[in-house]
Length: 285
Image (cartoon, rainbow, N blue to C red; front, side, top):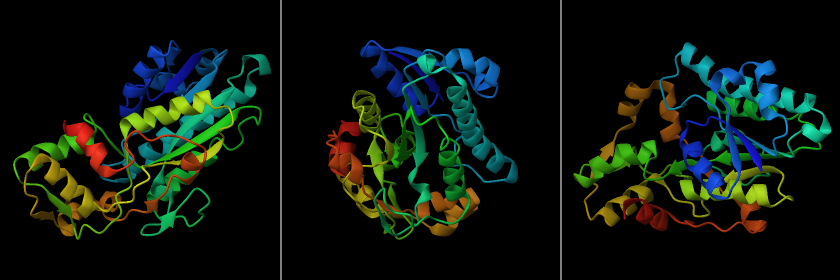
């Protein structure tokens, strides 16, 4: 298949593209400047089988007015342009499948959510995710549309792990605030495999929560990482320190929903790392 991918320099794409190429798919990387130009985008998407939309500026940064605008527009504008181009293409040249990243930040914190939940959060992140998903709602109904609401991605090259491992190996690791906030995670291999599974399974459609089945909190993650590294984890990152460092964006680490991948489980997707222990063990082995 010919598969076009936006956000091709990001963490997900850097793992997904090699997997697609190993499966003998032809991968077309959509450049950032091509996403903003419909005339340049149209020939790129013509005669592709799948379009995978992973574009978006990093969200874990200070939310200045300028950064907020970049975070929002990098997701919404690119999705709208991809949708417009797909809808304009003749039926015989149109992709059959559109996959888009989204985020569990749409859900209200401290509650349990499956895909049927409509208890959405208030604030900037939820607003971004809502607009991001709505940007492709008018996609031609003949194109299969799959939206993955993704949790915190863990892997050897993930920013979170690369930041935490040196501290934990020195015995300087610890929980964030009281550690009781939910920690919805997913191993990068399961993110990649879920997208491959979606390409192969033509009955998949709609919104899927892409998180591991095991629900844990930040304290459990901290203890598991420290235990597997055989190091203590006695420190605490206080709430006020995160707010000083990140401002409003500290809510990404302090206020999380508890999310369950009900549709993936029901439809037979097999997680390679369904729990936090197996996930971390693979990363640090």
